[in-house]
Amino acid sequence: MMSERGGSHHLSERRASVFPGRRKAAVQHLKRVATLDNSAVAQAYARWAPVYDLAFSETMRPGRKVAAAIANRHKGALVLDVGVGTGLELPMFAPSCRVVGIDLSEPMLRRAARRTATGALHHVAGLSAMDACNLAFADATFDVIVAPYVLTVLPRPEASLDEWVRVLKPGGEIVLVNHIGATSGPVAWVEAKLAERSAALGWRPEFPWRILGDWLAGHPDLRLIERRALPPFGIFTLVRITKR
Ligand SMILES: C[S@@+](CC[C@H](N)C(=O)[O-])C[C@H]1O[C@@H](n2cnc3c(N)ncnc32)[C@H](O)[C@@H]1O
Image 1 (cartoon, rainbow, N blue to C red):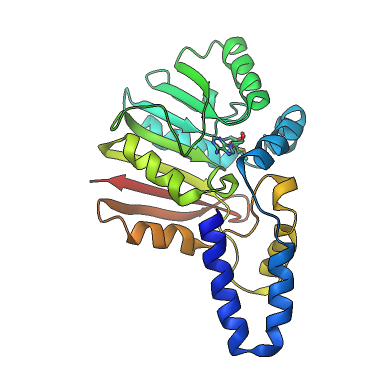
Image 2: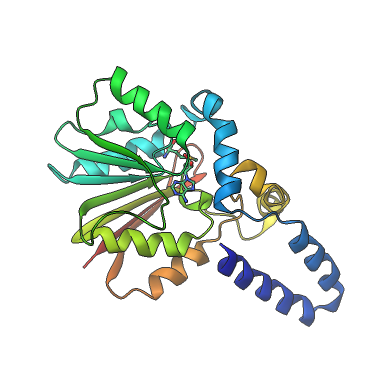
């Protein structure tokens, strides 16, 4: 996050120096944008945990269903669910899968564990507190990695993606669902305003495709196999990446 944010800041400042009138406003905006780090994210999700399902169960269900359905195509797959949260997607996986969920937030994980027990979700092989960019798994362990609504939450998205590629088997798939930020217009303006509250919200409303695009460009071992807008209203984007 820091390096990505730093990169984006440099770009904005470079543009601002070409248009000097915009420099002051750009610098002021950058100073206001709150920084995400693991402790801010953990604090935010400790606050979200009791109300998370109420707030996000329905609106974000389509993306979870699509991500789980894609994982379910890999019969008998070992699936890593990064940022499993309260486990809303866990009942959507096929019984033939084995799913390991990890999350930074203990309060969110406790709810996932409760859901697993009450729903008798026997395909859930484990739930652990872990940082998405420092996984305690061997190289090439998983057939599929799903991360619904997680990438925009991570302080270091590129480092986290690198780590997911490490634990993914060749031929395996990474399935992401995220809001990709608007590049211009009123939505971009609203996202920029909301970004000032990133640390309190626990996610970044501004998440340009450039972050993923640049990261993919640096990985000849990966291939983008699908990118499409999802309901509701195309707010979220499905991204599928395979490892050669
Ligand atoms: C928006 S929630 C998504 C939860 C779930 N996938 C869903 O669809 O509802 C994002 C989750 O990512 C977790 N998270 C944030 N940073 C993380 C990190 N560095 N490592 C692991 N999990 C993280 C948060 O604790 C939170 O549970």
